[in-house]
Length: 317
Image (cartoon, rainbow, N blue to C red; front, side, top):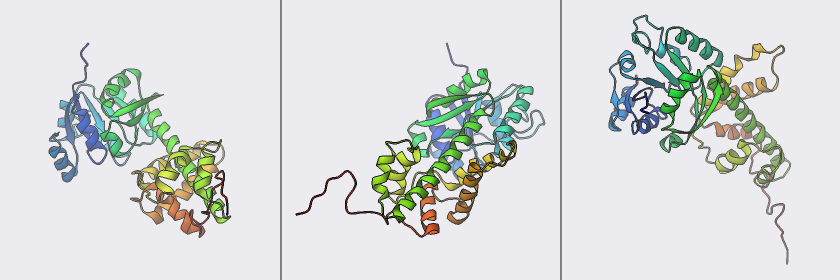
């Protein structure tokens, strides 16, 4: 059976959107829109055609994937259906599927999806996890939320770039899943570094403690991957900037008032990272929070390095 999806539009062809659009163009016809002339130029150099406007892209495409840096940009780009504006739904008469692969505020996403649905359009929130390099290799992970019929078509648009699709439920659930994941990831990384700094200050070597912890109940992706690869190595180059992490933490902070009492642990994570972001800068790699914590505490992770490691037999002659 022939796929109903033939033409895929992309709004936003920056560091992540460009490789996604290029890979997608090997399967479907692709056109793009980006307000940055340089991004449009680079897209052209990769063989992609730019549509003249958002409304022109919407008229041409069967589905539009949005890869936007700021969550609220989705509402601006999608627009108010039928109002005649140069947006994805302003002039489009037939229903359009929009797949948003950026971060977002889940409750607002759910409300916006409902409004689009009432006007005959569909929104699938499918935020992706992974670096631009992973996009080039089609190894992204997408957390996909939306109505079942919309998800079926969105899946086809995501498959050229995503190795894993995690179906999370109805509209807004994809954004909610990424928000929860990144709030936990932020907490895991910061607390892992702080615990290791205390060990280092006491004269114990984090480089020998981390492999042991990774075999125990305190293990996390932060300890198993980030510590050795990006922190203890001193490279701080995971490819995920502080700016992107703070987007999800700020969206998460909007949930704090939903609880009967103010959250304790999540609020502490948000406050700590907010301070770190101010001092590190938005463009710093998020793993550089280790350097901020070292300076803040006057302790280096290398301080506790010893001449031999537990579990390695040493002899003297």
